[in-house]
Image (cartoon, rainbow, N blue to C red; front, side, top):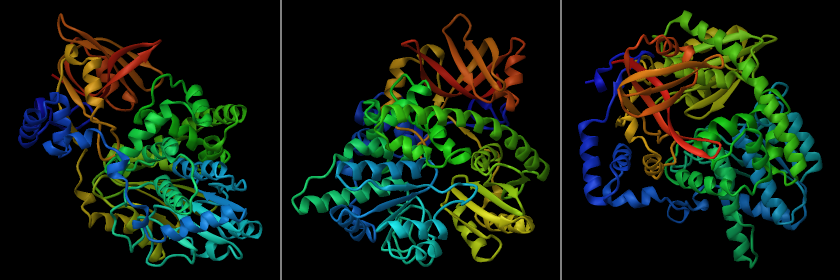
Length: 580
């Protein structure tokens, strides 16, 4: 039965509350642990047993840290990096242009600086001119002046470009899905190699780089040397883990939890400059990493100079950091404008094709390749389908895809490339990229839809809104939020709890910007509470609540702390509503 009887909300979703088994598990947890009920409800939803509650609430790297040597080629990769340091060899870092690639590069730059190595060369390919990953010309050029090239967040499928790096050793530190064969590199460290067991498949590239540095530190200690403080670098790992939408399970939870603590110390020059220009005046949360800092770091790779993000994260010069942060902030504003236009056109195409297939896709001439990934995410959210968005230029389409839980997008994309329908393509389960001839787009998307249908993507309905229970405004306190946060961090794989506020009166509603809605609501004669609904006027949510006519509504979303001029209050991040 739908929660509060909501079978179709204002956004077309059914509301699903906790089932009886989850409620019973929460009660058992409360009895055995004496923890507050809200925490027990979250732990029950995550399947945490009473005897595991303490370790889940307090994840530590000591308990969760994997042995880096469990990954193939790890020992030889770390050994080769150390040999380059000791031999004062010239090192180049070839990085992807997103947050994960930039964080991975910054990790290596920071570590190499602290061990006194020769300053490395940073190379980030231009998204439009060069595309994703190593290319023959760039690798050949780097090999002429460097002894070692380290590819981060890319390289696992780059057979030709790595072969072109004549005269230099190449190490790949990556997490993207591997093919049946590996490039002829000195070492390929990747938890998603086909000959790995998948135990660490959830790691982002920055986490793989961190493990390589852990192994390098072990080898240094074995030879009587002391390495840098790696714990101080976990801010970069946490940032990349959240921004790359890696699931916050296992060691990833510890990476993010510890990374947020490190970031709150404001020791990294570039992140301090970016946080200040973004108006972040509180301790960072996963939300800030994913929606405030991450998009700005990505902006350089999307529509500007590709290496800006990595340079910002790696610099120790406050003046350079301030200039880079300012430039990225400006580019991010430009990116939002470009994205809005492409998003409107892409969603219109998808609506015209209908929403009953296994794939939502759109393609258009002149669509900026730097925003197609973001737009694919928006299409996925709107359709609850795996989504592909392709920008076409000179007869070639460059696209990006995003998937939904339970549907692997990366493997079918690789299969299309093997079948000749794509020029190239790759990625992982939840995200992928592709290049395709314009004349083959229709055939490629039809074939991809067929492959996704075999996974059940065509049977997906509208995404239900899953709620952890009901609250009243008077019970939504800062103290409650502190209790809920103890069960975090929340993100991919561990969604933040959502609550319904039943039978609320809309006391005030006003439009904010073009698409957002600010609401004050409450119960008759009771406590008032504020809510913000981003993008509300892209759906029926905004118009219905603005024109409420005195009706009562069930409101649903995430409860969060809002800090304004040093004062804290609780607000609802409103995601859905239904007439009561």
